[in-house]
Image 1 (tube, rainbow, N blue to C red):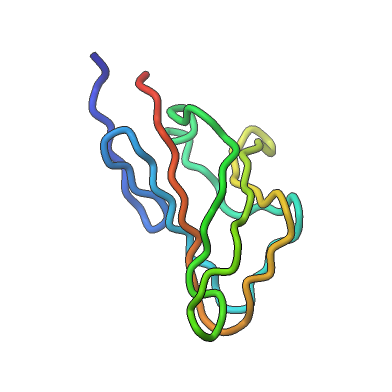
Image 2 (image 1 turned 135 degrees about the vertical axis):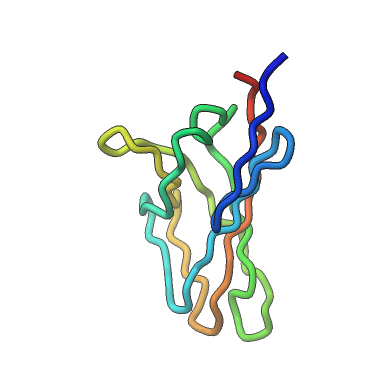
Length: 108
């Protein structure tokens, strides 16, 4: 049986064996293909069971309607894991918003 794992900060929350991402995207931010989004804490990275995923944007236009999905993946730079955008994504200039996603965590 594995030991319980708990984690919570401004960008990530672990509940049970699920990692929930809630990354703040400031007004006017856009991502080009293969651009870093955020560093992944090492304790989360070593428990991730998979790496490619989709992030769902919130409040990306003046009506607050999400526009599409952002393909994300994980890669290391100088030994540090990061989430990267796979495609270009231009959410707009109207409001701050969030990227939401979730991952299954493995037992270790």
